[in-house]
Amino acid sequence: MCSSSTTESNHANTSGTTSLTQSIEKLDRSISASESNYQGWRVRVIRILQEQGLLTAIEQDLDQSDSKALSRDNAVFTILTLNVKDSQITHIRKCSTRKEAWDALPRVH
Image 1: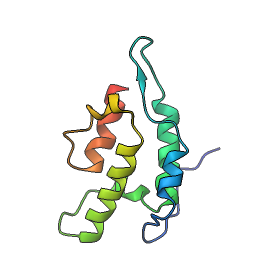
Image 2 (image 1 turned 90 degrees about the vertical axis):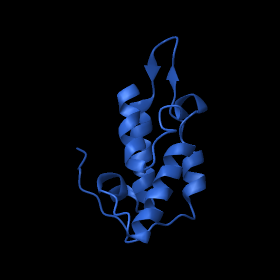
Image 3 (image 1 turned 90 degrees about the horizontal axis):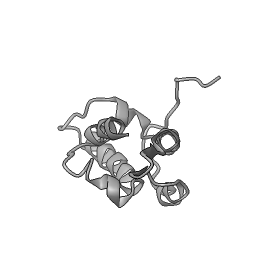
């Protein structure tokens, strides 16, 4: 059974981000079939964020005065953006934080 508790490092390890994000299928939705790979994509992105020590950045409110929090926000937003197909960018292009992007995607999938 899966557990909702997670353990994360105190700071992000970005050295493996590129190889991790290249190993998953990008989020897409087949317009003709109305099928989405969102559920599987979400699980994989959560695992990447856990591995990089960034999962709490999705769950916590952003403190605009905290430079470390802003850096984590940018790192998560980059991971999300790099893992959606171009056809899905339209759903997150006006988002200014990772939380806005993360919350926008399930609404269209």
